[in-house]
Length: 363
Image (cartoon, rainbow, N blue to C red; front, side, top):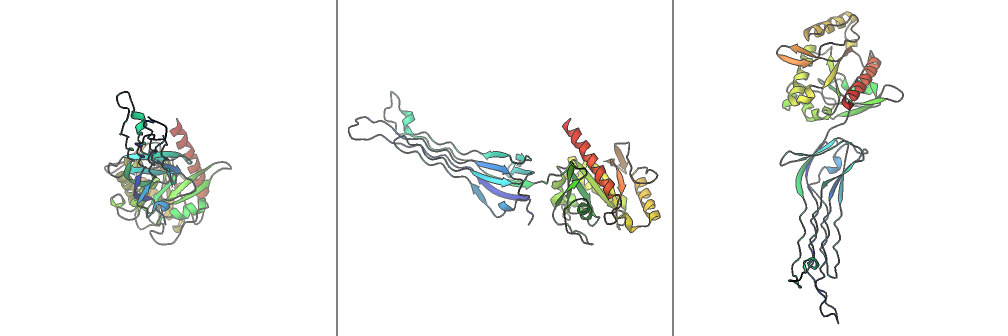
């Protein structure tokens, strides 16, 4: 089962109380206070583990708690510190305070081991409170409490390219052709029920990660369909690939503008990401019909195709469609994943595109 969101209570341990004790021993007339300190409570750590890709291990758990520190004892014996607890999560996990909505941790570095909540400090024993005016202190500090919060774990896939499109436009087929991923493929809508990742190689030493999420439909940003549930998985991607079905009963310009609107409604950042367009299933149409529908689509959204329609690089940054201002695509490429038309050029175009995006982000 794909689990990418879990809410539970997390607590660090309470510190142990300091001891009130006096040294009483035969032939020792004035032994004095000897109460030891309490042990520190256990802390809560988060381990980013690349060997896990969901939050399934946390499913069904209601409370994860570190151990409390033990109280101090006489003869200046310190209490034992409480055992820490470590929670393993996949890369890309964010941890939120449910009550305030505050982002506590954003975990992207594989192998990181970060303290989420520190355990409570142990109390001081009465041996610390002896002074010239109080030779027999009967007071010791209680241990400090740990931290308890209701937290939400949310996983966001870390990928370079995110596929967006209506259901059954060929996203799963494309990722299966370009990578070793084997998502379920069928000729009906909402075949993809959970996000999928595929590693795509475009040279001997270079590759990028592509994410396929369930299809987006009109109203997805308001909770319709499955796309809304998983849109956050493409928030971390540097590049989006719009999949526009040339043979779909929905008009191509309608698909395109609806996707733009839904992404923008869900997140301003997501709606402004760099993107390209793949016009899919062109093998379902004849050559002349393909050219005609693509020219009509490009004309409707304000683009001018080149002569062979193989690829188009717009010069302008923004396009206007009605009253909506939308980012211009970096390229438009007609493809067929089934017939392998332009799938290899798409592999290298996306590879170069990802490389450029990473180079810009590092500057």
